[in-house]
Length: 235
Figure 1 (cartoon, one colour):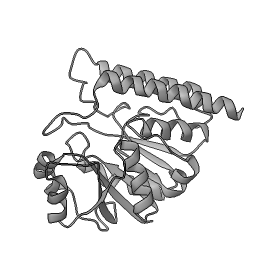
Figure 2 (figure 1 turned 180 degrees about the horizontal axis):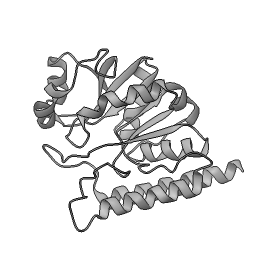
Figure 3 (figure 1 turned 180 degrees about the vertical axis):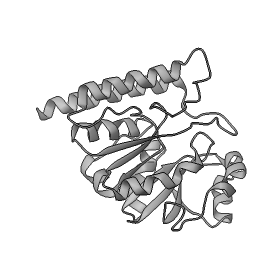
Figure 4 (figure 1 turned 90 degrees about the vertical axis):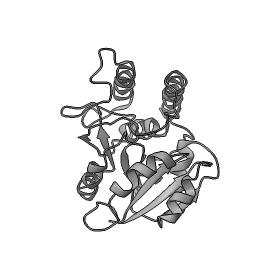
């Protein structure tokens, strides 16, 4: 199985300067066979940094996280795609955990921040609004769309892999940050094999998140409603 590590970047040069050397090179021991970056119109030297380090950079034709996924599916030839944001949130140590699960028959593999032995960056806080909101969206997705298989504990997290075959079957088209939620919802509804493993979520090493909580939450609500309407049309 040929697995492509897809670096999702947009103005992430400060993070890359701190983390890039810690990402293993493609090969038998890394868990992936090639590394490609998809860039969402950076203007801070991100593209130049990656090119200086020998990484192929695919420019997005449109902005948006979902558009980055589509660009990867279109431009990168692989049997599976492992999406990774090099900002510190996602553990580099977990990169090698995806391959055995994909080769074992998983359609989608999710690094979960919500299951036992995992850690969400809010877990050390008394108030955990982002985690509580995520768990609400997890419950809604499982309650409305799950036909069989285990309860999916982290339906939203972007640290995940999907096979090309599954991506083609699911016909993903969300253009924005709801792409992972759409992927999980449609996979649940189609009884695809989704496998999770616990991960430790870290803090960003530089800069600010590009997804403000309230506007992003409203987008997830609209995505859930749209997918439910689409499911109704098929009944």
